[in-house]
Length: 107
Length: 122
Image (tube, rainbow over all chains, first blue to last red; front, top):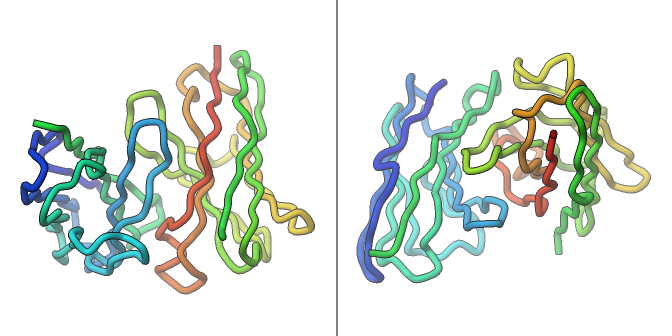
């Protein structure tokens, strides 16, 4: 299952509402996660099951969608949110796949 | 507190092998699947496979079958990945990552990651 993300690069300001889209090549129900990765660090799990916030993740992060189209939304971008975001599908582990990433940069 | 601590950076020549370790603490090692994910320089994330620490059973992405081995030592709560016949495009950061919990599909979400091990093939 192939995942595409849009945009691949996003320039935004602190306080902006930001949305990132992930599209699957076939329906995956809600079997999708979102990860955040900062330079030189491993990824961290933000959301799983398309919309369940991982423990400890700020509530400004939210996820939605099912089937083939999914969205990660940051309601009010904070300085620590500038990072690269990846989606991951888990409906098929032959293989598990990640999207190519969306880099969120400071405007 | 859950920790996954990986072994240090490695440099290998093409054709050699490398074994990376992932020592865990702060949870029951046999209660959670362990995955391995790699990231080539400036690139995205590539899932390699997982090991069931209780049984030792493994599942691999097809492209890694036959030249990657995953193992574990439950006595020291440590998982390993060994990559043979290294090529230059195996140069990457290799991460271990724990499955969220033991139920399906939650063991496929990766909730705690090691710090990464840089493997350079040159």
